[in-house]
Amino acid sequence: MNNPYYLTTPIYYVNAKPHLGHIYTTMLCDVMVQYQKLLGKDAMFLTGVDEHGDKIVKAAASASLSVQDYVDLISGEFQNVWKNLHIQNNDFIRTTEERHKKVVQNILQTLFDKGDIYLSQYEGYYCFGCERYLTEKEMDSEGKCPDHQIEPEIIKESNYFFKLQKYLPRWETMLKNNSNLIQPDQYYKEILGTIHELMKTGEDLSISRPVKRLQWGIPIPFDEQFVTYVWFDALVNYISALDYPDGEKFHTYWPQAHHMIAKDILKPHGIFWPAMLMAADIEIFQNLYVHGYWLGLNDLKMSKSMQNAFNPLDLIHSIGLDSFRYFLMKEMTFGSDSKFTDEALKNRLNQDLSNNLGNLIQRTLSMIKKYCNGNIPPKNPEMDYIIKPANLLSDASKNYHSCMQTFQFSKALDNILEIIDLLNKSIEEKKPWALAKTNDPELLPFLRLLMDGIGFCMHYMKPFLAEKFRLFTEITGLTVRENFPGKLQEILYNESLPENWEILFPRID
Ligand SMILES: [Zn+2]
Image (tube, rainbow, N blue to C red):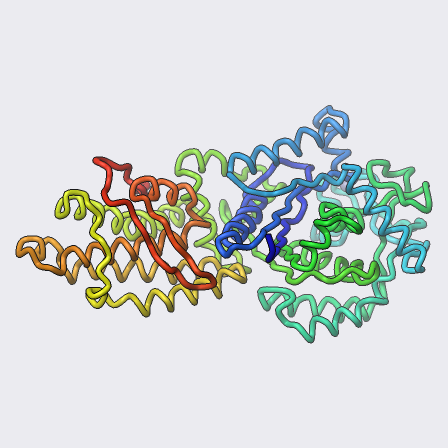
């Protein structure tokens, strides 16, 4: 296959079980990968877990497990969730794997040898309760550790630093020459601002912790007194999974690399990672995509710190995987925050899926059964004027594709929902039940045009509604001949419908 495409989720931190935030990020990527496959791309989809660091050692201790047993357990839960959600990742990387460690050490050694890593004094806020440095973000409004309610002490120790400053001007220039590198635009602007601030401080990036405090990490290859700290470990997963530097996968997929993250990890991905790539003489990724948060349940960010976060798997069990996936992808405008409420969920699913799409399908199939003995009418190109969608369909598909390419899934779906609307209205206007009474020659071609419109919509909704697509195909024999990008060649169906079929989009109460 040619035409590679590479997409990554962040690697999730295994100090807690998977929650809605993880699920949303991963589903966004899965939809994109299914879409790229529709375009005929050879799509490689990577997800995984970050298994190192002091928080994980703590979490293991509080679960009374060895660290290894603990990370095995939680990593297994992540993999199970992805399986249950039919996520089609090609690989799952864990940072405790040998293949990852050796790449991290290789890059550290390369950068040390060229003088981009040096030993210096690190000063920071240290909580003796947590046994680690806290960032200012992690402290509460009174400057205390939220877990221990004590003020962290400022301490100094030797650590290794990466010459971040050396690469900031070059990265800034690259960004200014390509405003699409980070999307949506608000995050691109935010990163330019952060680069500016960082240049003013002159600070480099601390990349190690002393072994005497933290053992659960990747040893620094040129100094056994230290282990690698956070980002020089975690970020490298995007290339270690491709067998950098010599792997065939690296050569194939890395030139088409796209990253998806939530906005809380914008700085490391939007600044540290490109600087690390530049230092290691590796090409920069194609795009960094950034999404917002789901708000709900008292407007709190649904995260690992929120103990009362609802269990998405229970919800999926009751409304179905496709409906859940459709809601997440349609409800949130990419890049912004969105509210997750029962009401929003019910309204969205009933309106878009039951009332619009579901109703269109059910009415059309029932009319074919009633007026045509279940035989799906053949195409009749001379009668295409009956509904006017020819141009509308090509416009809709053009807009759909341009939105899909940049994760604007909600907007992409709007184009399809408009077509569904138009088809429903055309039924009201054309009144096929009246045509049937007078044996009007327009009846059969009209029903066929409805079926073609439905096939068009189902095809474009396939990355969102895989299971419903499969069911619809089972009922009707839908086959789509395509000539991408942007053009459906032909929509084919079985000659006839089965006796009965399952209602595809029942209402939710
Ligand atoms: Zn603490």
